[in-house]
Image (cartoon, rainbow, N blue to C red; front, top):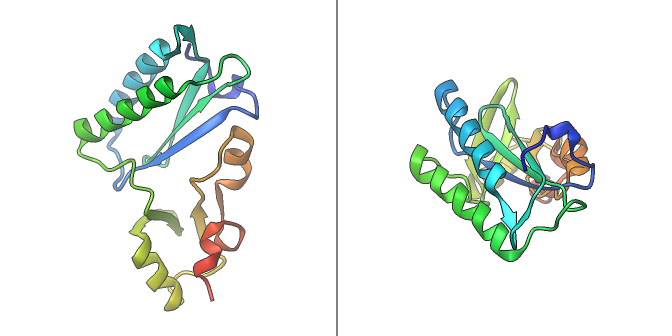
Length: 161
């Protein structure tokens, strides 16, 4: 069951998928329609799941599920991963590779392989003050407060001098 994002509780489970490129406006419109359809049909053992999504910075797909309504099962989580894999194929984009880092360079969102980000940290091309996207947040409250943070406040800090 699709609901507005702001209707989900702060404890709603979140999954963040970062794209290796920006989506076009046309792609975003199509992806939104596909996500709404997927969420509308998403179930766990036949029970509706209450969920929503956001697309941020033309690059991040955030799916949130209110587990107080119904809990996701292994099969329903698998279904969401298969859905994301289909988006990857449809739009020739990488959404599931967790070994990449997104961070801000002014108003631009940069995307680098983790190895390159580590090198940049050693060269002081990024710092503890660099705004990074902590895609490991697990619920809506963390997403809203700790997703876009200085590197010093996320797991990225381990690479800074």
